[in-house]
Image (cartoon, rainbow, N blue to C red):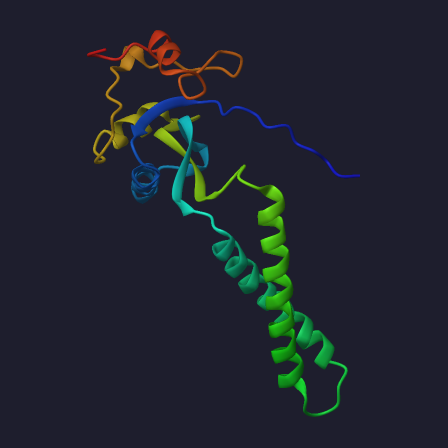
Amino acid sequence: MAIVLEPQMPTGTEVGSYQSYAQARAAVDFLSDHGFDVASITIVGTDLHMVERVKGRLTIARASMSGASSGALWGALAGMFMSAGQNAGGTGAWVAGGIFIGALVGMALSALAFIVRGRSRDLVSTQQVVALRYAILASADIDQAFALLQRTPGNQSALPKRARKRLSAPARTPWASSPTAARALVRRPGR
């Protein structure tokens, strides 16, 4: 029987805040380089947004070409399997035939799907989930982590020692709620 683990919100105290994941990862590398036990560190993306970037309009020609390319790959694979049982020679013919037939079938199925779908989704796009900022949480040696991260570039967290509080799991946390709720929980200088 498979064990299913429920997702859990991370616990710890925010010791750093960065605008990009690369900056946050570099900060954790900085901690590691200075002898900090990074096993107690968590990087949490906050204020998540789903971004869809439109690449262009989907036409029947574009849909058919996409189907032809994926069909050709599947056809090549089928041709290799078909040639596996053959004696010496003939492998190239099986693969070439598989590519040709796969491209035709893929093209036909993609064109049919485009026609059936109609105008409901006639654009080509990519989707991505992005975070507005990345918080670094520490569950041990909080003061040491905070002090080290003050020397890293891009750190937006400059909380005085008395304002940093240990957050527990049941409380709403700045990395799991709206920016308004985050400001209400932890007061930062200048806000």
